Length: 98
Image (tube, rainbow, N blue to C red; front, side, top):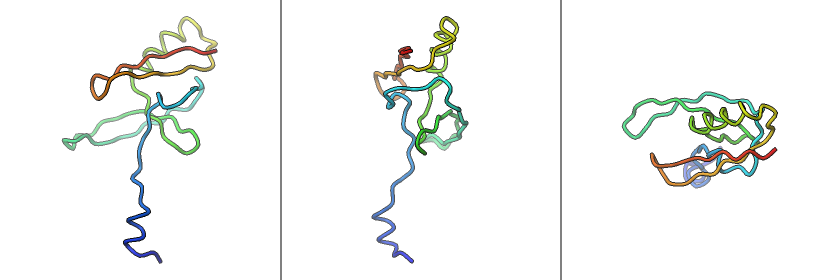
């Protein structure tokens, strides 16, 4: 049995990374729905992909951009996402790779 202070020092809060943190993203990854709470306690929904047991959030704007690309290139296998800005001013760019 561990002591409280040992557990506290070893504790890492669960976090969700962003799809822009990945170098390459496969188009056939499974999406999962998640629910969170904002700073006002309001519930919100978001989507994630899971890679190596880590969650990466997929913003709706990325899904919209990817949809436009897939309509023109349905055989796209991989892409990259870049992000600029922070908070509500974050902009994502989907870059098709192959």
